[in-house]
Image (cartoon, rainbow, N blue to C red):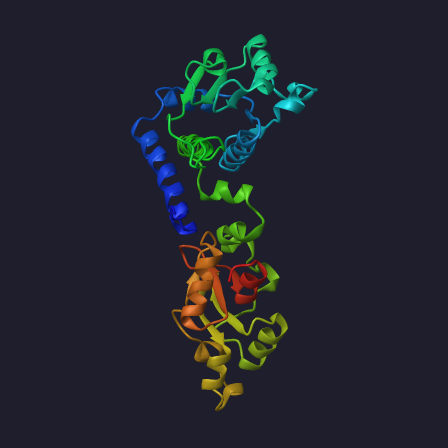
Length: 319
């Protein structure tokens, strides 16, 4: 009796087949790749991505990745396109159609629409002799690799290669547009990803919220200021610059004759600080490493700009 492969063996076989196809595509990237990137960089409207079935799901992923990395894009279902959604595809756009065989019937109306209105068409297909390949202005041919399903029919290797090719397009466009971390944050304000990209300036306290005293402020008045602002710290500021801080620890270390002293006598000099453009996660790391609960925010000249508290980081989802 033939031994049945274990699930682990099957998984390794699937991953090996798909990995081989990806490496083949890397080593023989479609000739039109550079031209497609140049085309998409110049699009005044959006990149419309479409496909049927599994290719449609991949189309949504490619469009979403492009949209989140600086290339306006939208997925359009070919069936819905035939019933009115073709109006979403304008002469200002470019269209990417995905079909492993290149003969998907449901794409016919979108193909005809692009030809009628001279809308640039990019075809992603394995079949260079297909209708899609023949009609496309630019062809991105997938490697002629076997599907990993065992019966050679379920889209597996082909969809993996298409998704990877879409990622390659999106990242190339992203880098050539000069799309940076700050731009990425603008499109990802929510969730863990947005939290990890938040800067200190987005959550810091400023203005009248800050607990600020002078070097010669009496400790009685300093304690009132610390209590009123509720951060457990006070900033010593002279001529707009941070010269020291007073923490609960400083108060405990100077309990003897505390009320007879001035803020400057109790303060810690050279305190830990952060910049407004620093990542909030970086500021949290500094607080955790130094076992402190707040950081004052200063500019390059040590002028006081704000304060970030550990609770601000936790509320923002940075932990």
